[in-house]
Image (cartoon, rainbow, N blue to C red; front, top):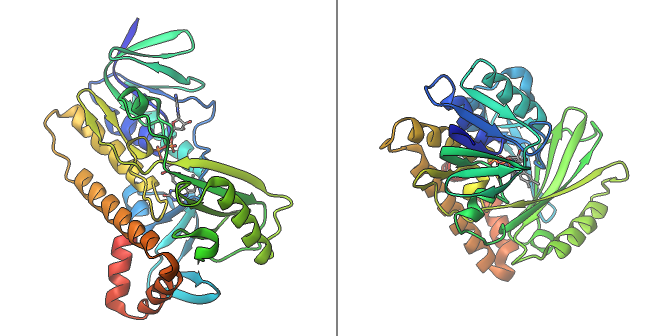
Length: 341
Ligand SMILES: Cc1cc2nc3c(=O)[nH]c(=O)nc-3n(C[C@H](O)[C@H](O)[C@H](O)COP(=O)(O)OP(=O)(O)OC[C@H]3O[C@@H](n4cnc5c(N)ncnc54)[C@H](O)[C@@H]3O)c2cc1C
């Protein structure tokens, strides 16, 4: 059986960043991806300034950048504006392909696509009839992680995100819509891309069952007079049940670790940071990551905010409206951006 120092399952932002960080080291690395093409993923492709800075993303990969967003609460609209750009959109396929290209310079990193890992043991992973042994295993395989299940975490993902990809340039603004009668404590978004727009929403099926969310979304789209006749419908689980990063010689990263934000649905940044930090842990056993505790802290804060919002029940709309009003005050604005951004 062939053996690698590190086997990474999943070539999303987390797995690719992990492989990149291990690139050029003395370790042999195998990155396994179930899809033939690296990059495409059900995602709205929205980023904040911290993602752009962290990724050091070339300008041409940023589709649109915004120094203002529109926030709507039950028909009340507020324009939130900054001096600098703070919201961006990228295409997930382009991001994946760009991250992949960076690996080409590393002879110690091998990437194999079309390899869906179906079995994990303490010694090897299996895809098709092939078994590959590892010293370290990294689960970067997203919300339905096979590595996470092997570790004994069998709870299904807690959230679901749905979106329509509409081939149009008609939408130019970055927008959020809060309306508890449709989306409970969550929201709908409009994120414009080059040649298309992502219009979607998310929720926890425990609070808003998937079918009810879908029905509400369709009612909302109709009310907004958004034409979806040419659109592609997509839905994907969102795992925000954080279960830990390090399990001996096995690690979880990104959505596999449940690092996605339960409130905003943002997960690309957490995937990138955890991918890099896990690689550093593998390269220097004993390395204590300063960044992982920050991710976990923010993850918990978002969970608290969400729980409070859900607990607000019939006062939720009032709470959202108060939040919108508070955006008039710089101090609150900065606090909110710090929490959410
Ligand atoms: C509708 C929706 C909208 C979203 N919008 C945003 C947004 O605007 N901004 C943001 O920051 N986040 C957003 N997210 C979250 C974001 O998509 C994820 O947090 C992010 O992709 C996590 O990266 P990852 O590398 O951990 O996992 P993924 O991107 O899911 O990558 C996992 C990879 O593993 C592969 N894989 C899975 N199982 C196996 C297996 N058994 N064997 C081999 N390979 C496997 C998959 O094919 C995939 O390529 C959104 C999510 C949804 C559902």
